[in-house]
Length: 312
Image (cartoon, rainbow, N blue to C red; front, side):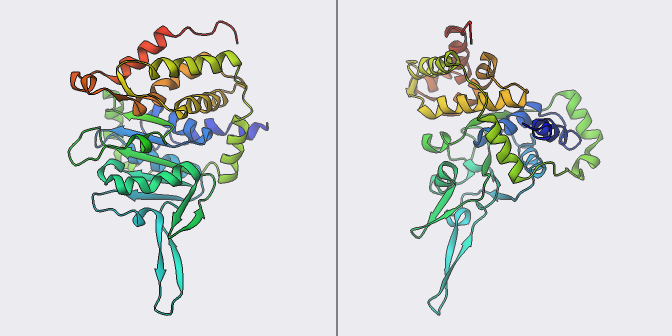
């Protein structure tokens, strides 16, 4: 692998330093999701830089970026596009904003499940079907969605099918007092920051190919599966985790190792990503939801219980 490609992840992250204050974990997980070939769901309170971080991250990648601002009256065709039928009998396809390399689905849980579902085919198969005709989406393709905290006013919770299409869920919380002081004092420069274009679609695809060559020892595959199985069979969980959770851990761990400059995965890669892979996929029993059980606790118990492999 050439040195330029190996150093690309660090250059992308460093290119955001002057444009985003803090949010290191969010930036890092967006990059891991990109390299792993997945989609990322950002959840957080208003004003916590969800949209800004996603937009500026997308800017560093080159390619085409589009944003969909979801609302209760957003229609599926506002996402996928539609056929324009003329009086002459001719028709032409008008592509929707889903046709881009990076799509920001802003406030996804403010729109109806019917419109949310318009993204499922795009996220799973990188294509959309309109009026029986299938259209391929550009490559690389990534959806970054933001949403208000679960159960907030005017929100429609994502279905299990929709949530399962996201590789990671990341929480965007309030900034530390030090970061907020910088945001306030440097706000003029932040708002007008010129984010550099560091990569292009071909380079992103090359990083994805390189991450696929990272070695995952059989013992770590067993560890990944054991963690998912432990959570899957927890009596507090109503719907078992699908195999997509295991796949997300596997792909994510390879991408994290690649970013760290390693050609092999270690247990800490899997452990670091487990909360982000599992949280949005957990559907608790009604009793557990009513009692206020935190999904994070279930993940922590799995990490404490499942033995870490001693040899790779």
